[in-house]
View (cartoon, rainbow, N blue to C red):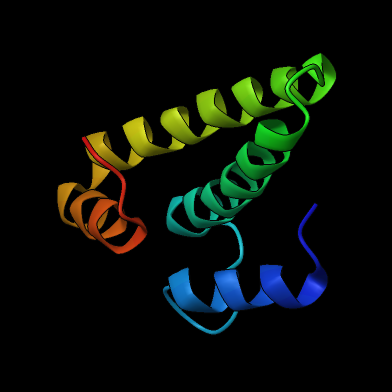
Length: 88
């Protein structure tokens, strides 16, 4: 789980303007941060299937946000992919 400070920093780095908290860019950044954290947890706790299910749901949600972004604004999609270090 992300702390408030980490989440705020993630939102600030991906936000398009000061009050932006819900744009697809921000949502993808938050989900990426959560996925990274949960992946580290699952490397230590390989039998934690409940967390693994949550991880798969987050990956699917991030994929949906990225698909939406790619369809509606290709430039923002490419910028998000590059900024977060995700592969196509």
